[in-house]
Length: 264
Ligand SMILES: C[S@@+](CC[C@H](N)C(=O)[O-])C[C@H]1O[C@@H](n2cnc3c(N)ncnc32)[C@H](O)[C@@H]1O
Image (tube, rainbow, N blue to C red; front, side, top):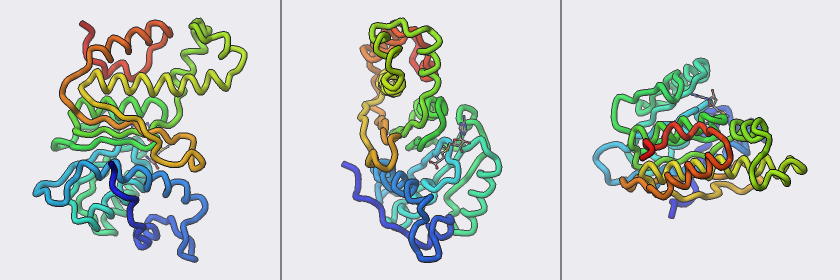
């Protein structure tokens, strides 16, 4: 079970520009705050306060890095040693996050401008995560986690455009297509669960035990699914077979296929 919700550190929220003069979170930031607070316990779970070496985290598509900073603050409060790498393709955001880390005295954080797929951390990483990394950037984060053999991978996907487009392009030829052609909303929802279901199978095939959770109330965001993989070391051949059977049956090429073990 994840740890209880984190403590709110108003000094930190202020430094991140999330508080109004009244001391309350700005309306525009309330949603992000709830998302971050929902995800934090699943990230901290594998890190133990007594450990002599830091637990190393990699945030894929960190953006403004609210999650990185709150993770660093919560770990500091709990006396847990951690180090965090934040990676984003947006150089301006990365530079700003580096400045904030220095201002706040977090010398255990490093930000890099890089595509997720190209990033090579200087040390082993224990936890790889992403919060709403756009579209196939979630696949890049999952693939990076498996490549680095992270103990935990926790990804909250964002939009699911790639598979949506592929289903439309192949003319909806699959079994459920008559419904999806008539009622596009069902098609879109189906593409979401298909994409994330295949991601979960890819994790299992890559040697992870997987749970799928809602990490925050759906009234905060409908993008509230969290894929959590814990490395078990033994890839599931059955999951791999199911993955390829579904992919071929649907006539799609999801980005996560690149992280699949070679087919036997
Ligand atoms: C929707 S924002 C989410 C940011 C942050 N995780 C959050 O929840 O506030 C997605 C971020 O992913 C970054 N991104 C998208 N694709 C990427 C890729 N392939 N490599 C690195 N960063 C990427 C974007 O630049 C953007 O900052």
